[in-house]
Image 1 (cartoon, protein in one colour):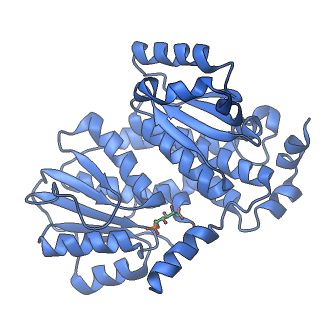
Image 2: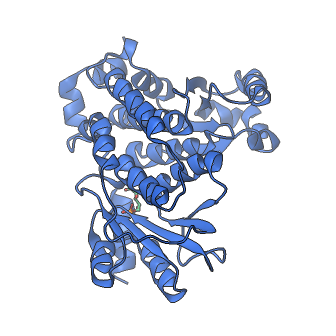
Length: 353
Ligand code: PA5
């Protein structure tokens, strides 16, 4: 076995490389999801079905919005739009619902979206673990779901997704059924065992992926449904393993990025393809031709697959695999997957003016 493989199977080395216990938080993800399903939104009064739902969030918090939007796209006629930035888009006007999601409760962009929602007199719901958002919700009597604090926002996907989905269900926007939630929970239970640190490299897909990527840059591509998860993998690699990542989706990348894949630059990249058993045959064919065209010039190629039937199970299973792979990659690269000092410094400087 390679040195890297030995490190990933050595519990002492893992503990030293991950001093804040990101691996423990990931191992507890199924329990997080189960707890999150029961979190209620306080003071949520009956309201009119919205014309559009705008989820305002950044980074790991916005990812919960992406997951809700993907589920909603299959199930309800009301669009769910994820807004990453200051203020609100012009679609957030009459009959729009704004859901502000920020794990810390302190992201400046989300606070600005809340301010705009108040100015426009739009119905507003908040999902947070505390900070300025929780204080504001209490003081202004805005409905809010308070989730447990103490972990990194990108590792709190369960805490952020399920209360958000529950808010929409209360408005008659059934983006995910009880049966679909049960299916997804069963799949993350199984994955928690399969991807755990105790499971050796030979039998652990996330460890094998991290080893396959090695010193290269991960470039992650999904299809029409798994595309948002490709972006999530990229951000997990960036924040946890502190490496550049690329992300995109088929078919669009076949019309642009594919050109760069047959240059010598591609040697430094590791292509990761997010396949979905339910993808359309034409998308499957595109993945096959893509591999054929760029397999030889890419530094390496890995293919992973969704699990389950519902969009929720398929996307959550893939996201969870990516989270584990990024934490194992951090360990291989000798960086702490928990801390994000540059991101924090950016926030601090803006806050201090
Ligand atoms: O996961 C992270 O640490 C980041 O991507 C954060 O989610 C991002 O900076 C936004 O912060 P918050 O989720 O607390 O609003």
